[in-house]
Image (tube, rainbow, N blue to C red; front, side, top):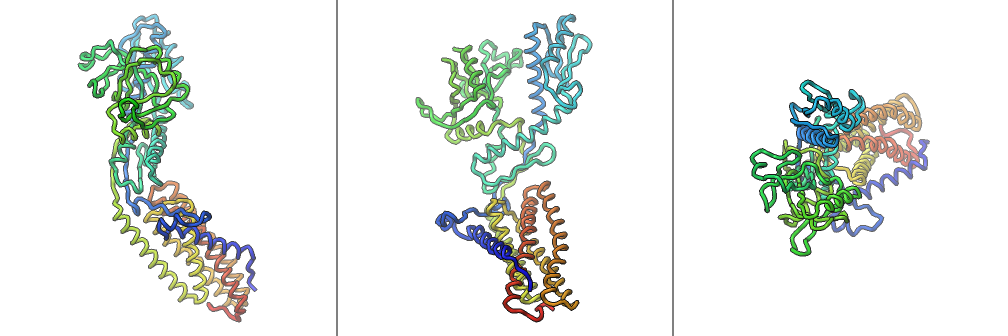
Length: 532
């Protein structure tokens, strides 16, 4: 008699209960889910952008701006090092993507080059000289400083990865569930935010660089001359706040937003207006305390994305590591700025390339269409398998129902995102699952026609068909893994559903039908199989 091990029976029962328990919350209203017992799961499927509606944005990371910023910092580092070495120079600036400086005294050219090579740049494996900058001496007492190509490429790639992580933290702060954020090409980032129907709000949070710096105001600078283009060395002209249209500030920042550990929105105790509170880490608190202690009575500018949002006067040293940013904030804008500061600044500006909004109505239509197609496909498959194999077809249909419950249960438990292509993957999975039963039953039929007894026909049919089933499903699983690894949102949804379906289909088509046939065989003790 066909053997049905006890562990198989237990496994089938547990799998069926698992599928029912984890699929059930998807068909219950929210009020019913909340009233479920504590041991019952409450997770439901996350619907993708095409089913739930939401926003889609495509950004491009401005790597040229990142390169310009690095050249500016390199220029200031060279200025500081030459001054510390007491070397006279002139003409320091960026020319054709490189930093060029002329040393006034010919006798100090070699000393200047040695000083710059000692401090500028950082180690870089594989680069000439082992550093990310090259320093060469040219005629007319000029020194040229340039980034090596590997350094710029590595920095550009790193900036995209960092941007993705910052964007993810910002969107998580908004409470958006299951956003799909991924790289496209060399320097583009796509964002799919299901349930977020206001792309402008998403852009306001995602697209802002949010680079925060604290810089001293140059009180001695002639503002009118700076506005006409005569900016003193070591300073920069930036747009101002409500009190002044422009400020001249020192290029070198006292501290930066990277040293913040927390930020939040609050209300000023004296004025009652919204403010943004912040707290530095240990390094930032020390630097900020030293800078404010040395500049009591002077003003420092709080600069956000190259615009002064506040320029208070330092009345007393600020040594506690805490502070607040005042400005013309609303409650919403203060909260948004706090979100940006907590998530961190983008390493480079983002430029919007594409924007799409999917309405919830379109998503509802897609859900109805997907449900109808799933029902029609399932009914058609069940009718076919029952007409073709009779009682054994009924067993296959029951296994198919458990298969659907398992797929939905696993996706609900893992909080996977179901997309419209995912529904297509589910329908394809059902067809593949039935295909496994067709292989088994046809093999059993061949064994029975070869003169074997019903018991031997069943055992040989299952064991020999299993090889073909595993071959077919392993190749499907490999394809699904490749699509999931390299595909974008909808393709990943299809691949994930297909991958889960491959595992559950083999289990249900082989194990569940074998258990059901074994029970039937023990009860009926047939002389012939119904599919002969």
